[in-house]
Length: 584
Image 1 (cartoon, rainbow, N blue to C red):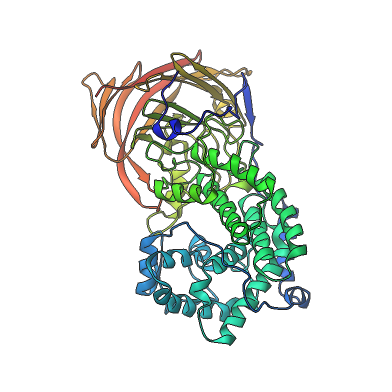
Image 2: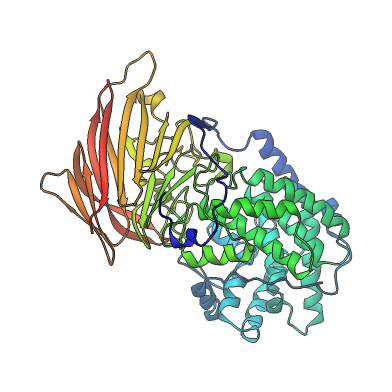
């Protein structure tokens, strides 16, 4: 039996919920170009109605004299962002915006920065570094200006369903920062805007894009139903909507349909914050929420490394352990990481101190992901708290250091630890940012043997254009000290035979890993700073070391290196074997 990390040994063995059937195929709709024209027209028409007297009437009603309760927010915020607020400016992914000069009616900032401000997620950051007495004047001054610009005039992105719902959740959970004023007119304005936001979500939650946006929107409706007076009918309506949203936002195995670790973390956090509302009202959480969390949390943990942080997949950066631990703790769920995901698409192989993560599914369809990556077949590897093999990551973390052009580069196959054929992506990344033709089917086989774990996957991303199937075989020894790999390029069954085509195998190394290539250019020693010594060997091709880039969870790039094995695929098929072995 394979050894398990301490964190997994501490919990009882549970039935594996996601055994992989032999020959399991995962399918992606090819060439998906995002929302249909009909969907875009319908959404534009709905936004236009916000300016009409009809929508104004919908938002009218009694405003509450107080909140019925203040839910606990046990998840800490970003200390640096909180300190920046105390110093008089917003800080987001390295970008600074002075508060005094900001125009809340027309924010000239990147979209993600605008969402950070409109969602009021920054309240959590402020509360992390201040007392109520210190933070309330800062929060109140910002909120007064935001209300002046947006309270009476719904518009995007300020009143987009997900931003409105996050705002409602943070306004209520951080109420001591925004409702401590003795100014009764201001307090009434805040409470009235909370009520108007709830009515806005009543109308728009189901119209939000499927996935995280709709999940957050319905979470806001449910929270409002229990924190504002007279919420009985809204609660029934909201819980029914939240149940539908959970079913469409997550796969049956608990992974988010966008396949983004950041979206998974936010989805779990949303459910944890709604759970806190049930707790503060001393009401039992619905069974569907319990079941949703019991699926989503293992899926989230399934893409963590030995250091407890998230892997760099589908545009996400390496979110650190503290944030993951805090979000999971807020859910109240204790469970082991999901190892074999049918639909979520990430495989987790664990032995000894070694964690091997594999992207074993097609990319998400375009309308479900803003920064989908051509990463099918890519791997990440960690040895205890030390990461060894990584992906560049960070395509969704645009900010001071991640420009739009760099973000596009981080989505490519070459930015991931896998095989690249003919210097092209396994799934096309189009000029408008959507994902084009490429991987439509992944065939997957996994076996757990006494000698270790064996995983074999193949994808058709290069079949139409170049004529080859990429098959990757991975074997992790029972003690975790050895990973054997084999990358095969096999001629596909088609009329026109493939021709000789160059390929490269890329293994991006984590920062702090120092490679030394052997004299025969067939191997390298990998020294982990303050960690173990690993050896890499390749059975064919030529090995070299090139510069690379790794993006952390805050969107900051770090210089690192990568192992590159070059070779040429032959029309009859080509196989390149390689070995990673812990030698010290």
